[in-house]
Image (tube, rainbow, N blue to C red; front, side, top):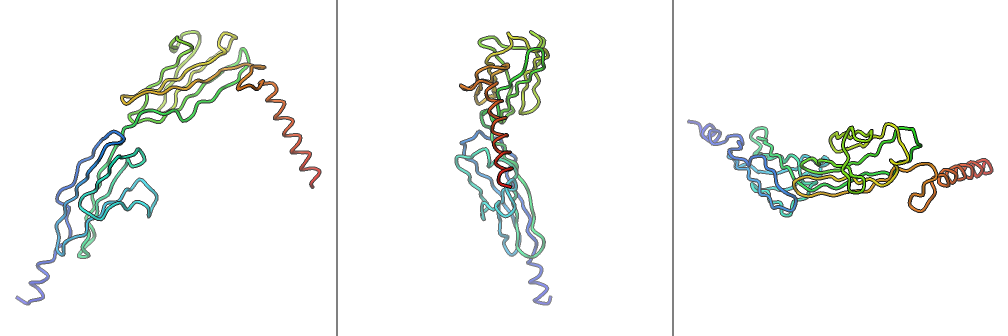
Length: 223
């Protein structure tokens, strides 16, 4: 055989032979991913985190990818690529799911008049997804009791009052729970004239009007 032909016979494209399976871990754990590839010349193996912005996802140039004290923002897909310039790289993916306890990212006090519809909303991030409960003082609330409805959709839970009465005003507690823990937030349903955070709600409305008038006057004088 021609020497060149024999040399070409010893060149073959990269192939990933063994790669870690998808994995679920708790936040703070250590994770090791493995990606074994063959090829001639010997392929270069790189790991890249796909769940971050383009160009920022490079994490390792090695068969092993080690992550210690893993954080929730390190969850997502990791791509192993084996390249030796003989052909297109061989590419495989592994998904890491990072469990973490709930934290409430949004809980806002709501003002509504008697006889109107009122909605309290509570938003929580968690993996696995949080389960929600609502309380007024020590009493757990349920749909259909005292004219309220509780709806849980993904990260958001809402407590709806269809016809607000004086007895509905007060502090409510939203509790978000998963297998790693729980957290809660206090949310207030208040009426006209109520004092929230030391400010009368009617005064707050007047202050907003005054501020709007001041800004308008300033704009008018300036121009």
